[in-house]
Length: 383
Ligand SMILES: *Cc1c(COP(=O)(O)O)cnc(C)c1O
View 1 (cartoon, rainbow, N blue to C red):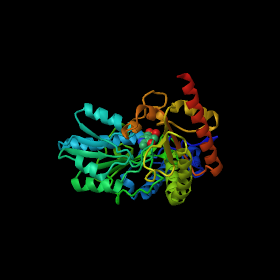
View 2 (cartoon, rainbow, N blue to C red):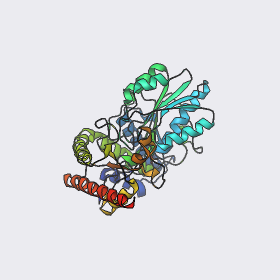
View 3 (cartoon, helix red, strand yellow):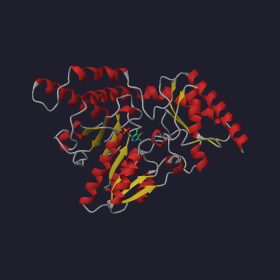
View 4 (cartoon, helix red, strand yellow):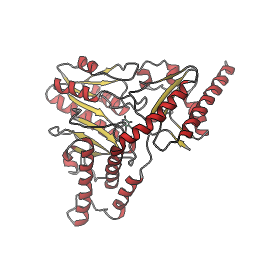
């Protein structure tokens, strides 16, 4: 099996697994308990917080543990909305190609009286700081722009957007779920106020993530209960997952430049190979994209059918995002960059890991080329 769907989730790394194992049967105490077993767990928890903060250029007290990217996105938007509303600012700027965790939360905020501006996305899939600046109004409370897009992999100019927001006194949130562990992050240098990440996108465990909230910002509480996470996120901490996340983030952050070199070469070979397919178009900027991401549209085919045939050939890929699979709605991301409905339906996303070999890359190119040709022949016979 060739796994080329790392944007959907990644395999747990050995380092993360080894860090997690003692937490299950050795350090099983509740970090809130006063006896030694609890305090040992507490120490692991706070070590993990410091490790993660160090990877982001943040302070430990700015890190809140959550259940993953979706929860962090919800909490980030709710935090900025509450802060804005307290001073009468109820306008939020975001973009049309965000993850649904952002878009659906913005829908509910709109129902609660917030005014939402969703910026159009240029065909290359990159939002500019100028677009952001032009959309800021006196009542703007928040700008939320994803660091890297989960479908087309395009990378946004986060530091430039952060500078515009800081200059205009507007809070800046970035959904960095696809970026963390793959692209450099420094919340101070990039002037980020709120940031979401999720462990399972960088070889950590599923169901855990963090919200970074710059000191001085009081995070809005989504889950009420005990006083964990300084009262802003109740619930006994998932210690094994948190420790695994810290190990996985540290490991990936240390390998970013090596991994980027390996992945970029393979990605560019995949792009060059798939480009030879007639009536194909690359989705998203060719260079300013995650080194792991390839996304093409092929005219005249159904992405879902292509996926089934690729799966039979041992290739795990995706068409649009995994969450959208099963629905017949074309990807909102591909629509946002202006792809027609047929092209949006005929998309294929391959997101590679460093374990993929040159031979596997060639096999993918050959198999996709043959399968697309076969599907087109069949659909021509039908008409
Ligand atoms: C995967 C993903 C999320 C959701 O993260 P979960 O931990 O699965 O809830 C949010 N945003 C982006 C960009 C993602 O890729």
